[in-house]
Length: 479
Image 1 (cartoon, rainbow, N blue to C red):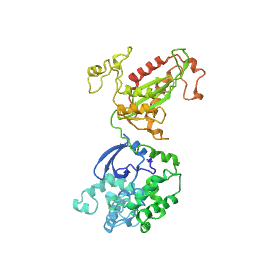
Image 2: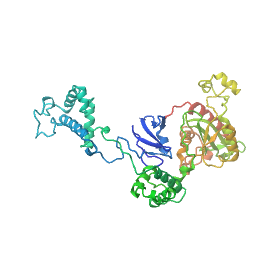
Image 3: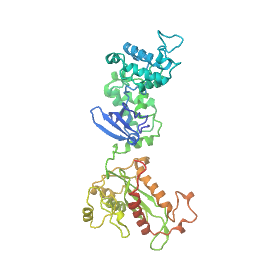
Image 4: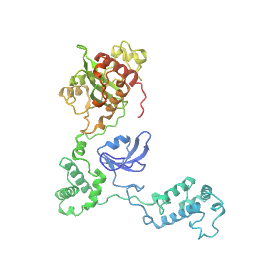
């Protein structure tokens, strides 16, 4: 998986990741849910999603490889001690007897008494020989089998050894625990690491420079802080170049896009409960409606508030002209108040809220309550439109105790949930209505203005009914 900070993230059990300058180990991978379980060196455990790791600006793979040997040169017998080389040859002999019927693997040079009847390739099949070998090894004395490295060898173990030998003939039967884990780049000391991170932070705000210039700045930083003697301990250009790519990627991204990562808050929000993050956005309603004064066809603006945890539409506003800060402030107020039932809404749209008696909610609101979530939002994610940065709206958010988390520049994935909600409403509702104008001018009908029959009030009522009865009650296709 590609990370936001560059490079490839190995989400395999036992791999190490650097997250916010802290090392974490992958303990559990659940691809069906798109999440992993991480454990820090201090024992702290947390569950994060693939999406969080892919877009986290300070997530990269560790430069200290694990015992699995990923990102390293292939292991050879030279990496083993003499004792483990002997165990490797014993294992290889047993595996060759399963595959060929001979411990040496060569029918032209058989050993004493080979092939044995249960391993004769002319009388038995590979599957039969595997079961026979598994039974033979399990019958060994447990202490002897442990010393020989053959304890707990089963049919599946023999199959796994054979599969590994196809890609690595020499080390296919070796245990990964026999080769010690490497220590990454030992020449990257704490001082050099500090210099690399300082140069990275400085160069992101400048015009793009090449790697030679970055290395020069690293030397300059170390010399100014520690003196000329410390410069001799800085690793070579090749090592610094490899480390830079491992930590921050290849650097092929345009400078303004890479720089936009630092313009965010620097915090990645783990969404764990309803109301924790609410995404706001405004778009032009893709359906022509008629205004109430002159009955002329017009377009209106639709502002949505989407709870990112449940993907429920918790509020919306329709305005004849572009929305203002007052409209958005009133939308935030709508999030904190239960939606009243309307005259033509039936009992199927008056669902009780879990954990709270329906009578208590109705008494609190002063009216029957429709089945739409309401809460005090903790964080509101918006784009950089002027309406969302207005001082009046900022003041209203502070009064409500809401934390403003603007989306990063040129990063549409920060609000992809609400963008996807617009697409869902388009395909599930708007495309069926008269006056639908299509995605763009090329897909527009002959006369959508003439097809418009719904007024603004009727469209608002239809959309509210559809959200409460259809969208809130539908089963999501993905988590």
